[in-house]
Image (cartoon, rainbow, N blue to C red):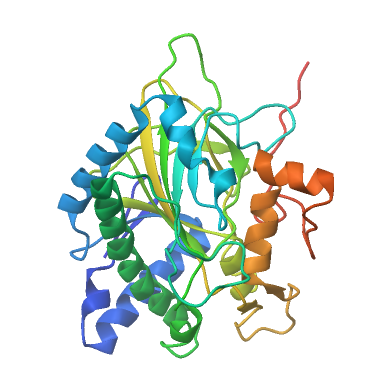
Length: 335
């Protein structure tokens, strides 16, 4: 069931089984991996690799376009934080910006008008094939994420359907990220150190570069393993588990070749109250509104949202600083 590489590897195939004992077996492996590491590889029979190849091809074609064409769908033009993200738009620290571009795709909510700033129709490019292929991958991975939510419920000792009503209209975002190759840059940061904001992330990278902060406070390179996804615990799952699982800081540090990355950030519904659900002596975390936390963190990293905050157009409620969860890096002494 579980083999240890740099990270533990968990096969989630049995989450499709009708036998509760099979699903409990996966939940136990997931629980151990999340307690021990917070980052893991996942594989399973439910993953469709044809969807992956189609996604990579359409993503490469999109980013090869001129910047003027891509900026027609600039994320700052959307109503629900979807669209094209140019290099320099994201900034996790005051010292530098991330050396990447992205296209951000949401749940593509088509229901009644929502006041939630992360929920609504996705701002799509005009290319119908792009929309079809990206939507296909999103829906495929979202269905798998729903199985994983059920597994987390079992691992945390609550009813298996605990999350079902909380993941119906989610602000879960799929990002198509492109890290351009730049021969002039040596050991440059592609994306700054951070935790993810949601419950967990399912990441598919095409090249090495990801680093994870381990429990010793040291950065560890994460190699690729064929036919696996990388999964990590995020802020909200740290709260839900009352610290049993810790959100894990990570970064893309070494961009030594062109690289693509496809994370699906798996969240609960926008208005879900996120609070400890594990039976422990004392809750270690205060409750928060899931979507509110997600938007607050996002607004502290994107330039167009930071400009709205600075102008007074946007006011954040109950915001906590970035990287408020997880372990901290050990600072090495310099002489």
